[in-house]
Image (cartoon, rainbow, N blue to C red; front, side, top):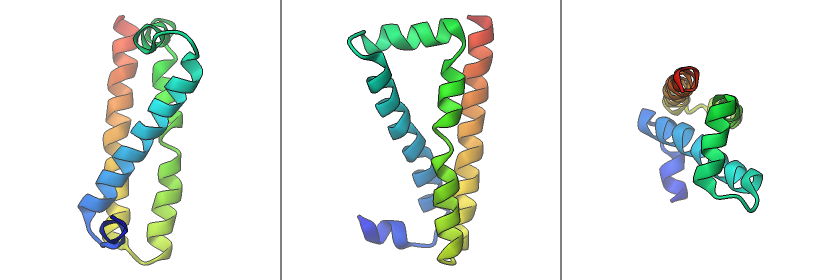
Amino acid sequence: MLDFLKKDANRVGVLLSILSPLVILIVVLLVMSGSARLVAYVQTLLIFGTLSKVMSLCVYPNLAIFYLYLHYKRDKSAKGVVWGTLAMAAVVLLVYLIQKIY
């Protein structure tokens, strides 16, 4: 598994930059929801318009991933992190627009 992360390829950076915010988002939602049902809690976040803000905060660890790839001269993987972060930004924008409609 760790050998896969050491490869210098775009797909490694994209995969890591999409999976890490999703894992962090799931952990944050589970911790914040407490005893409430997760689906009901996400619906509440949608209604109050805070889901996109929570999602955008979960993308910050990509900065550390990007820095590490640049530090260890894995430029292709760093470029993949940028592309994955842009994809996550598009998802956050889509959720934000859905919140405005909902």
